[in-house]
Amino acid sequence: MRNGSGHWRLGLAALGAVAIPFAVIAALDPRIGLLRPRPAVETVPSRPQPSLAQEAARAPSRPPAPDFAETRPAPACPVCTAAGVEAVAPIRGTLPDPDIQIPDVAAERTAQRERLIGWTAHPDRVSGSAAALDLIGLVFTAPREPGAGYRPFALDLAGAPDRAVVLVAEQPLTIATTTVPPDRAGALGVESTAAFTLAEDRPNRLAGFRALPYGAADVAPVLDPLRFGPDTLRGFCAALRLWAVQFGLPAWRTRYTLIENPTRVALAGEVLQSDGTPRGRVSGRRLARLCRV
Image (cartoon, rainbow, N blue to C red; front, side, top):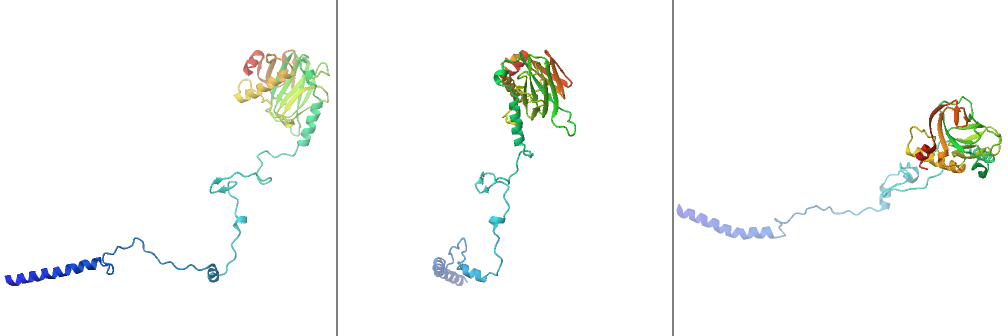
């Protein structure tokens, strides 16, 4: 038994010695490829691409593609590109107008301005024509009567021949003025965001005017002496300086009064009377300090 077992083991060892070289050769031989690395990506052999003529021949007939350059809707921005929004010049008639649309009144405004210029005194007659200047702000909260044109407003300066008045308004007015003497020059000035006219055709009645509808670049706002913002005060004080220079007066010789819903104002010396409601007053050196002039 021992001799048989030993011969069996000796036979296995001899067989292994012979088989190992053949196993190594089989693993390393590229023709057999037992250890050949597999590629990471399986490649698909490319097929020749058909020509355009072949594609057209195989494709079923279809209607031509629409011209998207003409039919596509306009983008939300003027010009949208991959680089962003490009600025383009506005196309007249296609973009909305930000202004309120009204009838064309340019010719009417030009005629009104020329008529008012004809009623305005020479500036040399205005300077020094008054000893004091009243700026009167007019604020209207009551609506005009139906069918009425400009608001009628009467200014009586017969009792104050040495005082001049500048009306500061924001609604259209027709102004009737009474003075002593009747042909007094430069008794009235107007600062308005709205159109205005005079009730009588009298030369030299106006000391001057600034009104947005007649070409003024800027006019004074109606100032509330009891509450105001810095922009309102700045615009008002700029106008005050202009009118003080126009009449040749220092700023402390001026006075400002705000009146609500008046139809008439009368001056008797320094006393101011009106059928409207007074809303505040500032005058003299206090007004000069307020405007820092």
